[in-house]
Image (cartoon, rainbow, N blue to C red; front, side, top):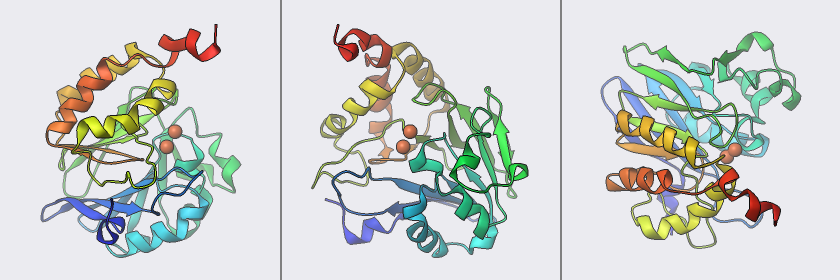
Length: 258
Ligand SMILES: [Fe+2]
Ligand SMILES: [Fe+2]
């Protein structure tokens, strides 16, 4: 069970110039609403916010990040993909910050449907990815994760912290009493992970390709948008598990009920 201390977040990596912060989770288990997690990178006092979420989370995320940085120092907001639990608060965020948004170029024309958005502030990422240099010289990389699940999706690799933010990849769907901050009890955690991945990830071929790429990055942590954070041996266990998963179109007969 997650504690009151954990629910408000944790610094996952810290050095003199650079921090990678988990901003906690909005609530304990609530039926009918997927739990989400937000993250903040601070580099020499400037901020990058990852998947800040929808309208109903806005005040909680503002309060959480304000413990670490003033909101006018957020320079960039990264959206892993277009889903409402990731990006439907965009108009509010662009209203209270001067930040620019990075998202797959496939979604730049869809985001304004969440509200009034200045297109000049939405930067489309090309399919093969890209990078962003931070004031300390640290680099953030937009790592392709297409079809995992969205057809235009990116992970964010923080090369200084050695943390990969994966959006929905690695997501768990908690039931009441299942919440943990870290996925240290791997076998138990996979029971909360398998259903989502079997249906939402496009197929095993793309899962394998993604796992091979992530193995080469060799992250210390995998930080998803839902569920719990992978660290230590659970990182490699998760990659091994996912590269062998039959999912999506591999299960098309089962899904259609042939
Ligand atoms: Fe999603
Ligand atoms: Fe999500």
